[in-house]
Image (cartoon, rainbow, N blue to C red; front, side, top):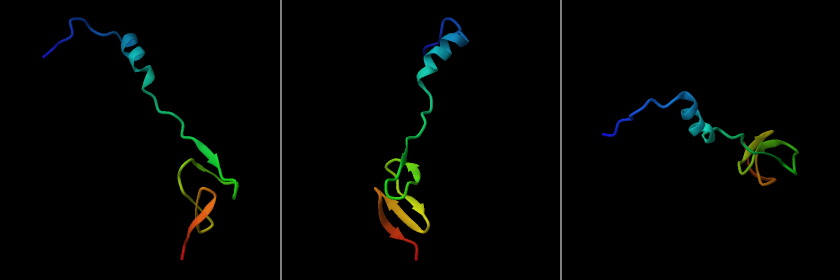
Length: 60
């Protein structure tokens, strides 16, 4: 097993981790309803399931 010869400083460790961060999800606006939703996802509005600006399903 390899062991470090010297302690890695907090600054050096944190510099390496700068690229590992969560990004904000992309929010789109539906042209048909004007509702905000996650892009490439279906969403419910008033008992109807919308995807790509079209009604895909209705609640029974």
